[in-house]
Length: 289
Image (tube, rainbow, N blue to C red; front, side, top):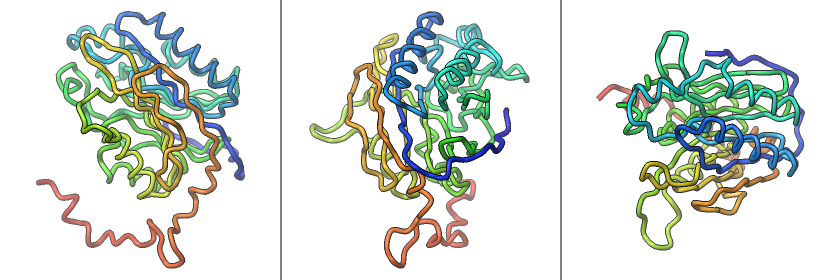
């Protein structure tokens, strides 16, 4: 995996973040590249500085078996990240997105990468595998989520089901992430009428519990009988949505944020969501059960 490194940081000020809710398809690599390019260029045209793409954006998600997955997996120097590097350089962007990685060890990973105009800054391998990912041949990652200093702020990232584990999100927050970017593929599940999808509620909780902005880019479009939520959302540092939901639709959503607000963890004159932690009391939580 690529190790994050430091570059000059923007001292503060507003940045525009975009989440691209596209509909990738298995077996249509060229079409997926076109979908990604069109979405990124739309986001750039709307003033985006940071663009987030869905999980496995370049391949689609519902694989038949490990053979099919391996046939579309790539190394980080493959065509997918090459395209993202070119788009980042052309439009002066930070791009975070998900891809199927063929590791140097020959294993397959549900991975994500962060690129900026300087090139590939960091990669990450999903640590918490979801459902079919455990049978299609993915290997879980074993490294914590990267947090990268960029020209627009300090950005952490992880993939989909990783967000369901507060301890994992907290690692990125404690490492100073001002914005947590999450490529996701959220399956559509029934929910009580009038209720906000649980995946979005949990994103809001992650943001509020850490006073950290979160940008989750979901996908849309049916794939091999699977319907997707299409619940992309950007939250502010208090956990409130900064974008309107476009459930199930292809869309590019943007929000303008001041990432410097996430550097303060205070929620009252006498409370701080990080300083008030008492880690010594939490030891039983992290024991193997």
